[in-house]
Amino acid sequence: MTIQEQIIQDVATVTENTGLKSQLYDYLQSLKSNKLQQPNKDAVLSYAGTIQNDEAEEMLKIIDQEFGKVDDEWR
Image 1 (cartoon, helix red, strand yellow):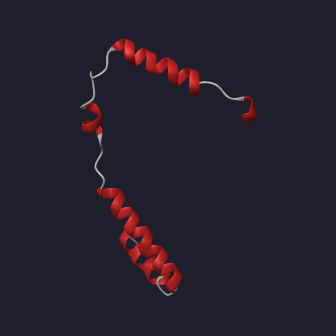
Image 2 (tube, helix red, strand yellow):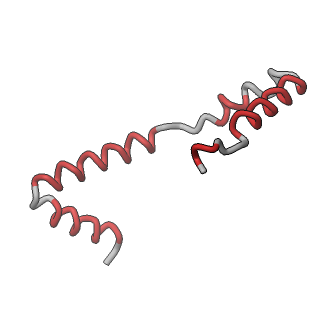
Image 3 (spheres, rainbow, N blue to C red):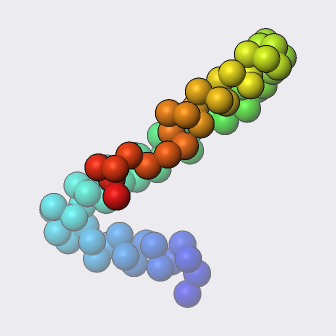
C-alpha cells in the first residue's frame, strides 16, 4: 500500500468521528500555513555588515553576562 493510499484509508477511518475530523482539518490547515512561510535567509543576510566589530563584541559580552550563567534559583 502506498503512503497516499494509507493516508486515504486513515482519513476515512478518522472522519467517522466528528471531533477527530475537526482536529484533522485544523492540523492540515496548520501544515499548509507552515509550508507557505518562506525562509527569511535573505532578510537576515541584508543586515550583514551593518554593525562594527566592536559593537558586535560588546553585544556578545552582554549576552554572555546576562544569559551565560545559571541563577541560584534555577539550581
